Length: 119
Image (cartoon, rainbow, N blue to C red; front, side, top):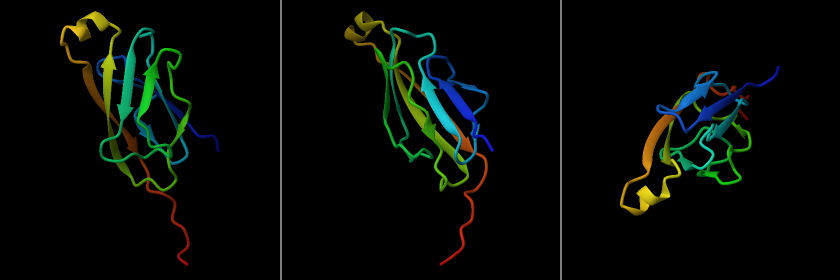
């Protein structure tokens, strides 16, 4: 059975998911800057992640998207919230004291991990 890939565009408001924010164990997740070619963003999971690579993930410059990140086979069912610190590329405004945009989203693991035989 092939695993699904979920793409999360952090440049949109709100953050957008293709095809949806729902994942299963073994699916892959890719965070992307979409069409925001001059932007930078940092994605972090403040309360724990369902992914096998913990992050934070930095996007910008030559890195417009993360490599595919795998949903852990042991992740519990539930929503894993993430925060995005996003800069639209308007560095001159940032120097004038403007904050980076802060966005948030979540990845919803829709099934419990597979049960293993107890040893």
